[in-house]
Structure formats: C-alpha cells, structure tokens
Length: 101
Figure 1 (cartoon, one colour):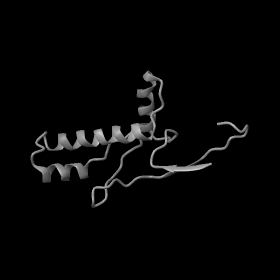
Figure 2 (figure 1 turned 60 degrees about the vertical axis):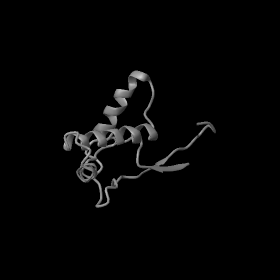
Figure 3 (figure 1 turned 30 degrees about the vertical axis):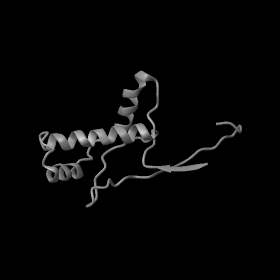
Figure 4 (figure 1 turned 90 degrees about the vertical axis):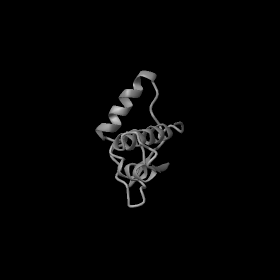
C-alpha cells in the first residue's frame, strides 16, 4: 500500500524527532492533524511576535503571516508569493507480510 502526505512521523529531520519526544509524555505519536494544527499555532505566534501583537493592522499581520513558517514539526516551510507553504511530499510504502497491519 502506498500513501503520500506532507507529514510523516518517520522523517529524519531534527524538528520531527523533537516533536515526537515532546509527545512521548502522553504516549501518543503525533499524526497529520496534530502536526497541522500545531504548525498553524507556531506560524500565528511567529506573526504576532513580528507585529508586536498589534493585529489591528491587518495588512501588517497578513504580511507577517506570509513571512512566517520557519518553525514546524516537520521542518521549515517557506511560503510562495500567495502565502501558501511550499511542502515536501513524502511517499510511503507499507507492506503486510502476515496479512495484518
């Protein structure tokens, strides 16, 4: 079976390993949705710091948000000119030799 995603806990990046270690206290491997939500929070925090919390200036906030993306569980994600993250896609292969996962 093959699957593809922008996130995989198996990635060998130091930031992925650090996020997994943080989650070890709750004994859960962080998944796709956890990584996505956590990353969004990091980007918001980074943007808010850049504008010193003055989010009333919407243009400055959007500009800072588009410039964020340097921290993520799966590594840095630069943004394109529209503010969308440029992500690596991991193609994974799983095989079940015994017929069970």
